[in-house]
Length: 181
Image (tube, rainbow, N blue to C red; front, side, top):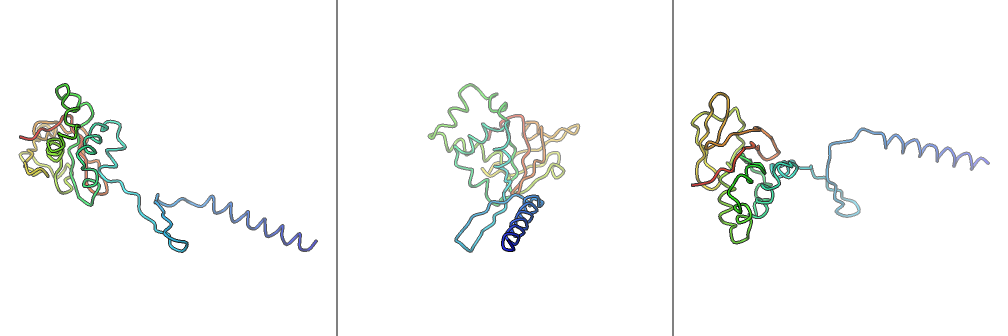
């Protein structure tokens, strides 16, 4: 009987500890990988500019284009990058068949040129933009910033949602596709 009481108390103690552990506050999200039976590697969950675009229902065409151009790994890298990100509506406004043609494997170089024309090295937040400013893109050409009446445009294309900050840069959503020269 004494052993039964001892086992009962042990089980109750274990149950109480388990319940307290289940109700403990949750830590920041991480990915855990068991390397071997004694080593646990914890990696921080990233929120890169690519992750932000992937989570946006308004940027599925951009994500498809970045994937087709093979730029996912680059833009998921350390950066920092400033991306002027066209919406699905911006791509839809291009002449019929343009997007479909650009997504073909034989158009990869042209697609890459267009996409890298939307990317600037560095982390440029909207307060750092000034009227008449020229910023060099990853494709080697420049974009021109204009600010009139508080409205920011990039090569005449309106910025509709600025400063979406990620772990490796910032996205400024634009209402058009900016075509290189």
